Length: 383
Image 1 (cartoon, rainbow, N blue to C red):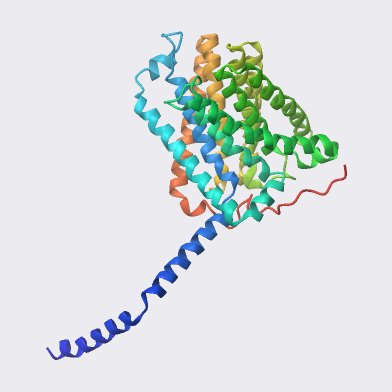
Image 2 (cartoon, rainbow, N blue to C red):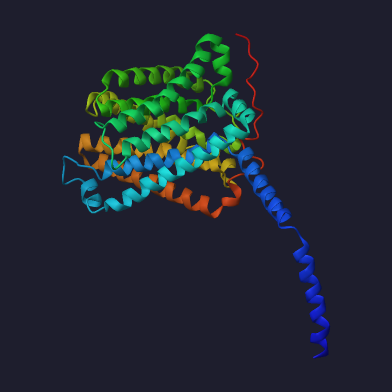
């Protein structure tokens, strides 16, 4: 009883001390913590994180194609997927859209509060290529949208919204390649440069779906010409070790993503998976095999989780999508087996990356990020 009487004055004194703390100070401390957390996120965040929305958008387009109508009812594609519930696809598409919106809001805040960092990213030979990723993601989601058809006005308006920034970035990048000469291109060219090519090809595919053949051919020719120039340049120094940190080695998978997208874009333009589409598909298969046979190239990048791992997903998804169109055209057991293998690999990689990302959220914004840590300046070259 005596102990309770002695403790009561002490507790009352503590309550008086707590009550004397101004609520405004607590609010200010809370606001400073939020501001510090947001500042930490925005300074580490960059356009490379749009790899996630790019991969999810590719998966949405893949599954819309798989559950779509097919000419041959006896194919493995129809037998395995005819019972796939449309709600599952809607959930996947909504998840991809939510991811793109969230990443876009974060990057918009980065543009508002850290414009110098965005400008530095725009001037860097690696960072500028990822600025294509949000617009490519939008074009992929537009083509896979469950409630939009290419004949609607909304589809047309959104195509312009996503395609115009791609062309503007083309003028910046390709204009430098053209006006600054051979030495400049050989200095700044790297595997991520192929994202600019993919942007043109995805835009061409979306335009062809609307029936805009001339616009589709324009974007397709723009992308393919620069892809040939870029491919020859990169083939001369394929290792890329002098331009990319080890953690960014997964972007080498973009080597077979570009011809895969090109085969799909040409099919949309001509209306058939003809010889040209098959040639591009076979080229992508060869490049994919060449990279898979060199696992040592990616060994250092796989030691610790990084958002750069998402660079594996989109190329595999697009290659699997091209294989479905090839199997639909050829209708043979080998082509369908190849389609199933690539499809399974694409899904496993995408699901695995999603799980790894959820389990390693603390590592999504590392201090030593391979892109955020780059010194953003253009290499000094003479024209």
